[in-house]
Length: 97
Image (cartoon, rainbow, N blue to C red; front, side):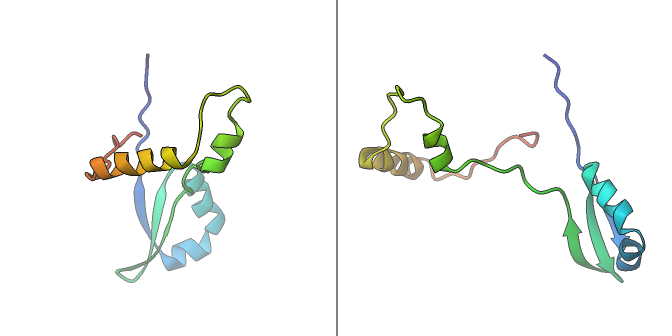
């Protein structure tokens, strides 16, 4: 199995440069860059691609097959809360995730 790791480059540009070539700026963002727009030495904006949309619990439940044995009830909610309380450490996913 081969994996591709894509690094996101962060570049800084002036507010004048951003205004002069906004279409080019957006093309760079689409290509995976994160752009920090600065006024003088002060950052005023960061432009990057939006986060991948995630499904809500309602969407996940709606996608279950009719014959699914999954039961989402009060006991399930208590089990989830207990699991969260049992593992209070922060989630640190790998950087490529």
